[in-house]
Image (cartoon, rainbow, N blue to C red; front, top):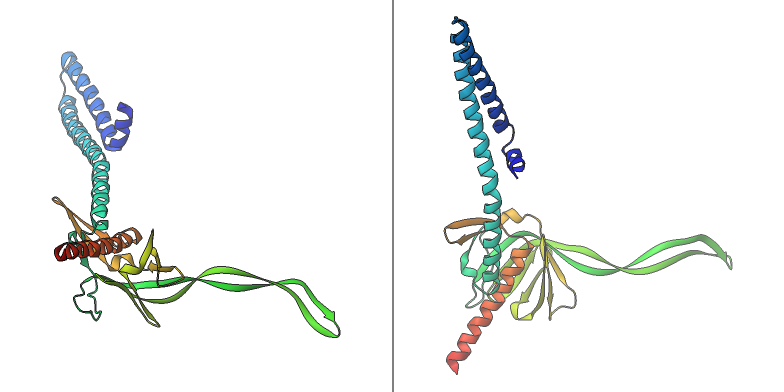
Length: 264
């Protein structure tokens, strides 16, 4: 364990120990020289001893400081990961008030009593589409003086980028406003949200196909999150986007439950 700890401290700590050993040896030689026969060389040796001792102590302190920093970093990373997981859980349950978004201001025309949570620019809309792949066979054959190409075909699914645009989330709907098309999905129609590292897959009851929203530039929209006295600025990735949409759905459900309770 001691060797592993020393290796983390790096070369400053080792060099400091070495310099102290050399200075100690030099001090021993000075003492022996004084016992045998004092000379002017003793003054030079004392000066060298002082310099080596000071350098050695400084290098040891630097090595220990580096060791302390390396020990603190894993703790800070673990603390941040625990905080982020706790905050994600709160957001999924509908507590969107802990997020403060920075980025481009939303320009969506709002419906009555509609609240915009956030807007993300530069989003690619992707859908699965079925295409017919044609592959060549054994070349060309002559049949009844007519040419026919011996080819085979097969159907395969590919992902096609349909458009690029802005994705806006409100308390009622998820709106995609692209360069060529626009679409909206009511929160009440969303069936499944699948998070990915750079986007989400969205399955709704209003559409047959799954829509994929890919975040091209995550740093264009960030969320400032506070956990106690600690503040984090997180770029919105697929995990956060899925959690925020899920939170908006739960927030809506909670409001509806409260309103139904008042009516009852």
